[in-house]
Image (cartoon, rainbow, N blue to C red; front, side, top):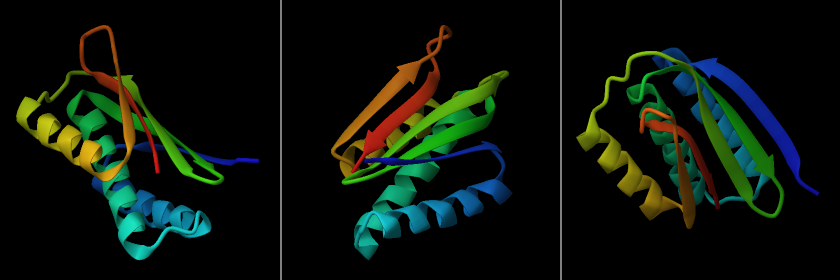
Length: 119
């Protein structure tokens, strides 16, 4: 059986710290070692930054905790994208290097609207 934990937050710096702490706690519940937990926290933070750069003002994060820890992030409140393709490319590469499977969902404008990964 998998437990679910969800949170919706504005994409501002103050809340990103809270999300990192929450993610660390969920990694502990999943039995991750310190290095794996840090990698997962980086993935959550980078995903939120991708959504912010793609013009979203807030996001919903859905965690599933079971034999693995899964995370799905969806952008909310789309406005004008900051669109920094170089930064997005770096963030995407980092995600791909740190977790086994990552999926990106695009919106109608071609920007990223959602990200899903698990470890």
